[in-house]
Figure 1 (cartoon, rainbow, N blue to C red):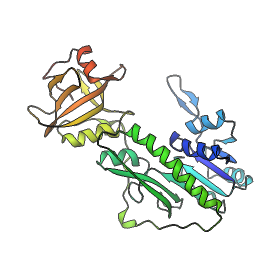
Figure 2: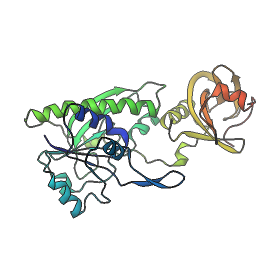
Figure 3: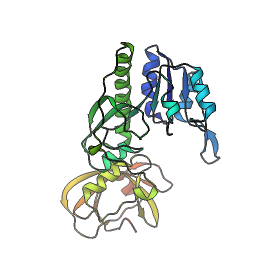
Figure 4: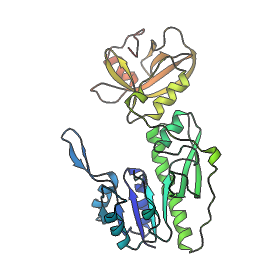
Amino acid sequence: MRYLFMGSSDYGLPALAKLIQNGYQPSLVISQPHRPSGRNLQKTPTPVSQFALEHKLPLYNPEDINSEESIAKLADYEADIIISASYGNYLGKKVRMLCPFRAVNLHPSLLPKYRGSTPIQSAILKGETETGTTIFQITAKMDAGPIFRQEKLSISEKENYTDLLERLKQQAADILWLFWQDLLKGKELSHSEQDESQATWCSTFNKQSGLINWSNQAKNIHNQIRAFSLTPGAWTYFRAKTMKILASELTAKLAEGKPGQICCLDKKSGFFVNCMDYKLLITKVQAEGKKIMDAAAFINGARLLSEEILGS
């Protein structure tokens, strides 16, 4: 079984590694071109490109995967299937139809819910208690193709984006391996069509998406903190600078005072902030230009005062 692997972020790396560990090396790895990054804007390979380079896998970084040049190059490998995971570009019909088993995609969601590019953050932001992984055939409409396999995964109240992403990577590796074994059996793969009436879409995020409005409900702010932690981080203003709020805990303590007001200091666990309804316990922060630290340590280092206001 010959395959082309398309990916850019590190989401699909455990899945690719699992195929390789079981003796199935890709005919070609395709990833986005190296982009300028860091202070010196040096061209940097994507995590998937870096993986391919380190493991001496054949690598291709086209600017346009749908160009005639790209299609001709992919066709030369006479692969049986294309496996995509967070590649970051639309696949035109000629690419999708290139292989006998077409092209499939790994998506960290329970499709048809959360189609789009931010399913993990969006699920946490909405307070979902369940997500999962779906492997489906790529079609002209984004994330709308027939589903071959889908598995659920619970989300705990304290789990943030970084932790959930790691678990979803492993689930993607496991589900792809099961799909691969189905392929090896050589039988026609069973699938189910997505219910369009249940489809929802992810929002795209920018820096302002992480700005905390302390007049919101505590549970919504808590979900926002989880959804953007550890990267890029939900944030607020503090002493005329910015500060990332990276971890929090819900409490049953009613808010007393202005939203955003620091109302209580606990040198063992962190500091409490008034939200619209309840106090939220802040347990991990990163002040502008500083390292990530526990909020308890921050209290002493910043000489934090009760009644200071966040968000202004």
